[in-house]
Image (cartoon, rainbow, N blue to C red):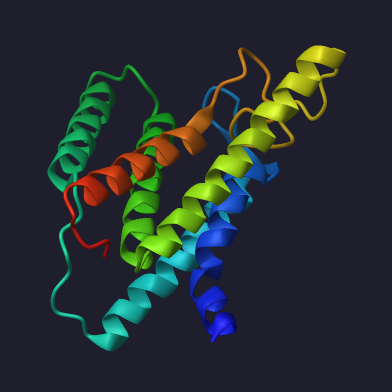
Length: 196
């Protein structure tokens, strides 16, 4: 029984761990000599997303529960698409740069929907929140270690969030997804709604 439970949430565990800890590697360059960085999370999102869509089509589910914040998310994506499209028309940005920028926005919200539809009960939600908080503490601890010791390990080789990125130690999409997730768990908890 326990093994079946862990098997069902294994994709969520892998995804959250990959977001927080995965190394990146170069997959080429786009216009302006900008490097395309691919992380394990990107590969996992494609694999898990295709499996999720295939499962949805095979089981022929007719009705989906509408997630909270659906319309604000669609509005955000619509504004982002309009902005990218406008900048393409006026040639303010290159096609590849705009495409990958918008693709990253879609990736963040795909993660949100994936989590919403795969968390079946409050215990799973609590476990994932605890895992994300733990991984967030690991990221912050790594940054503090680097600041305290003066080490700059990894550069662009490790971690999408605060882990070893050069600059002002950005928090990245990891904390954006964590915030959205915590907000929704709180919203559903206080409104006494079912989680997926």
